[in-house]
Image (cartoon, rainbow, N blue to C red; front, side, top):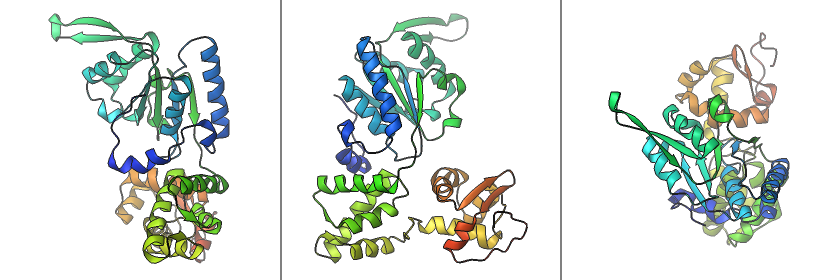
Amino acid sequence: MSTPPAKKEDVLDLTLRPQKWNDYVGQQRVKENIKIILEAAGQRKEAPSHLLFHGNPGLGKTTIAHLIAQEIGADFKATSGPAIERPGDLAAILTNLEPGTVLFIDECHRLNRTIEEYLYPAMEDFRLNLILGRGPMARTMQLEVPRFTLIGATTRLAALSSPLRSRFGAVFGLNFYQVEEIEKILERSSRILNIEAEPAALKIIAACSRFTPRTANHLLERVRDFAQVKGQGIITKQIARLALDALEIDNLGLTKNDRRLLRALIDKFEGGPVGLKTLAAATAEEEETILEIYEPYLIRLGFINRTPRGRIAAKLALKHFSRKPKNAQNPLL
């Protein structure tokens, strides 16, 4: 099964990526639905429908795509929305596919609209309509492409155009994991990486994982470094806490930047409401960074509420920072 060269930062993800459905922890409802889709397609001797997965980074969208390819015994090709800049790029990818290949497009919401127009007939009729030349001399050339299954992944479902979204046979949202599921993932990762870790230490790491497997695995790797340098190579409860303190991650997994954002909301704006642009300016952060990196977890924790008037710090956030409500007009404080 062919895969593109791995980026250096993806080596850990590749090492720990589940190779069998039984090793894939969590997302039970999604897995059950996918298995039915694959089994039904296999009985009809057809390629599975095009599938779309959405959810926050690190929840397992790429892993599911790999598992689908393995389940149906197909080649796996991966690319991303920003990497397909011209129609020729798309044509080169599609015409070189083997029949039945699973084509994975990450960040598919970043495909430009011109590329999308060329992709529609490829998804529906497995052909490409290329325009050669310009002006009165332009002509259309039709290319047949092998039947393939497109799996798209996006962190911003709303940013995906409706015509593209409607061409997927099924759309699945991946949710944040439960802490107990993260613990199971860390136990498996510890075995693969040959790390000796106390169960209590893994509980601490899981609690700080932001309910995300990728974050949990990267924290495990950092804590392992501390255990190697500061301890006896064993991840104990004390070593785990020492490492997380050094990384400025608190017991809920809040980073220094998370806390800075919350403190700005609580102290500078008396708990809100405050608009996104104002909050971004006050914290020197990009609006997209707040939307995609910080807010999903803070909302999941119940620390921030979005309202038509702006962001509001919830009671749990005030309690975490041991602050008393200052804004009597804020009904959530």
